[in-house]
Amino acid sequence: MEFITQPWAWYIAGPVIALVMFLLFYFGERFGVSSNLETLCSIGGAGKFVDYFKIDWKENTWNLIFVLGAIAGGFISTYWLSSSTEAVAINPQTVQDLADIGILNAGTTYLPDEIFSIDTMLSLKGFLILIIAGIMVGFGARWAGGCTSGHAIVGLSNLELPSLISVIGFFIGGLVMTWFILPLLF
Amino acid sequence: MKYIKFFLVGILFGIVMSKAEIISWYRIYEMFKFQSFHMYGIIGSAVLLGMISMFLFKKKMVKTFEGNEIHITPKKVGLYRNLLGGTLFGLGWALAGACPGPMFVLVGKGVVSILVVIFGATLGAFLYGLLKDKLPH
Image 1: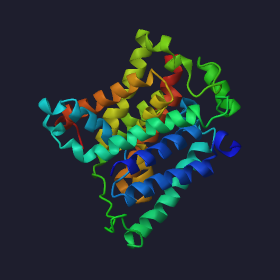
Image 2 (image 1 turned 135 degrees about the horizontal axis):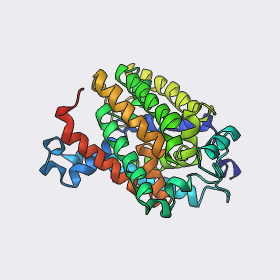
Image 3 (image 1 turned 180 degrees about the vertical axis):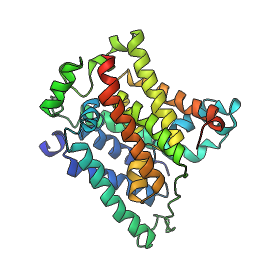
Image 4 (image 1 turned 90 degrees about the vertical axis):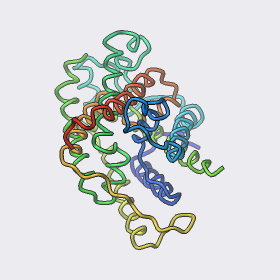
């Protein structure tokens, strides 16, 4: 069991993700998580306001079920497949860099309290950071026509130019946020 | 019953996202700081094996479980949509430390505040639909 409960190396994780994509194609569908956000809008009645969301969302039921499975997978791995420690073995330099910008104890858990603790969520600044981050992810993913799964994994595997351009965009945005904006936020 | 297979593949996805620490905010920060090979190794090896899958599909050596040929519908082309949308996505990815898949996995991990991010992401998708015709694509 120790093989399972310890953190998985990249050379295990990459092939498992490729297997997930393969299985979805084998079952007749294309791997892509962010389209579920549009499906959620349609279910929530967004079609009443915007024609774009007037779709037969039942065709995407498989993808919602996939997401439910992902939630279950997160639960299973956290409560049944993990050793007691929650530490993430990030580079000591990363820990130092984060301390310098005001994020302390980096890597002792999966997520920084400075962004994800309940107290932070209930503060105005903390709430705005969470919701604005979400809006940028959702808006950007649908504008670009996909996220990390649809573009970076499937699109790049299929040598699609739009996906390569999108992934370059993901990195432009990610680098600007990490190097220039995050240091100003905390 | 036809959906149970998608639930099982979803579980596998959730487990690998969690066990390989892809759902950790710190791993995303570390990736954008170029301070670890971890995330690059994951994406790189997944894409490399993905290319082999695509080859098998195109050569019709692998079909769906129902025996149909696997056609991969190409993504919509557009320099502005891919570059600008991609950049906006990247800003959010590095701030939240999670893209859409990991957001849902974090729900299963019991992280309450990620629900605000998911609400934001759904709102973002709605705003895109609302403003779509005014945006360059």
